Length: 101
Image 1 (cartoon, helix red, strand yellow):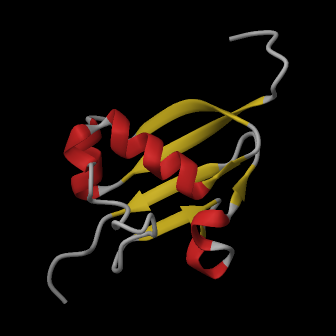
Image 2 (image 1 turned 135 degrees about the horizontal axis):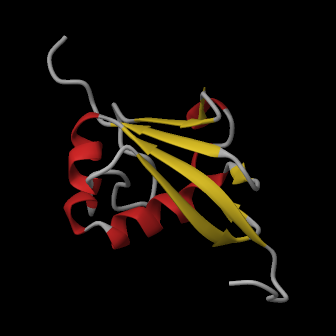
């Protein structure tokens, strides 16, 4: 960390329900190289937490159906989905599919 030529951004990652159980805590802070997208971050989360591998992204690298991923409280599927760009200080919240109906 520190004075690298590429800019890094710090994101606040929030996990809910079963995702929180898999990660072991509600909030993580992670640094990523800029520019970074929601897809990059979700792939990094899956590789860091083996319990989440395959639970967030499908085989095409898209967000799985029934999953909610919010950037600063807004569904990323209504922005640019996995191509949504993230900036320093952004908050990404992950909600697993809700059981039942």
